[in-house]
Length: 271
Image 1 (cartoon, rainbow, N blue to C red):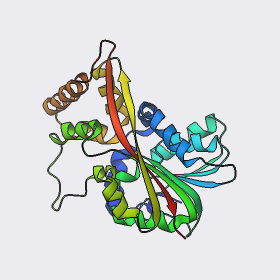
Image 2 (cartoon, one colour):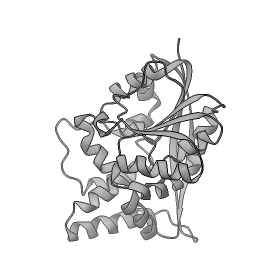
Image 3 (cartoon, helix red, strand yellow):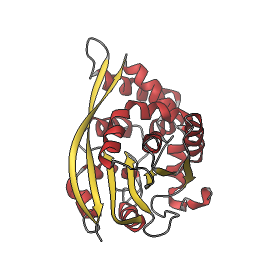
Image 4 (cartoon, rainbow, N blue to C red):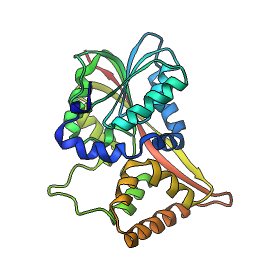
């Protein structure tokens, strides 16, 4: 499989997310407990074939593989996939990583016993297409576990900070990824094919300072890094100061401690 498995309209999102490369691993580290939450709910078993969708540098894939499952990881970004392969090899885990598009997955019908996606599938360009693909690749009785950010959460608040520096979106505007943080919206997308249940969780972003968070995100978080690279010096400094100030708003005596609420969707594929 090659980069050509990414559809034309997703080449730009692929480039944005891919820009973090190996440094995205530090982003995954800040949500490690939320990823573990999803792995526990998925409860992968030895011999099962599990897909980690929008795998990034493969943190979730490695956690599932460590439980004995046969894991495939897919992401839009070729550099992310290279980093994922490198990390898995370092941990002596056999995981099948591919560049791929969640809206047109390169797998046969009814391939997987389970699918996990931690803050990944929510960023697809065409949610309905991704939902169809998720349904298609799952065997009857297969389990899915998705972690998504809600529209009223602190992570969505960070995107509002960045939005002030982004170009004017196309008309009509693309769907908000934070719609996936709504039970009602997920039910619309997946309820026909999956029996769904939900719970919430909170992961806390802890860092010595807002500037530390900036440095982590501008190096490894695609949307922040790509945005920063496209700004002139004055606007870049404005983004940096606003970004730091936002996180400093969650400061304790010990440093930044920003609670980030998330939704976990658990689904079982209907027969």
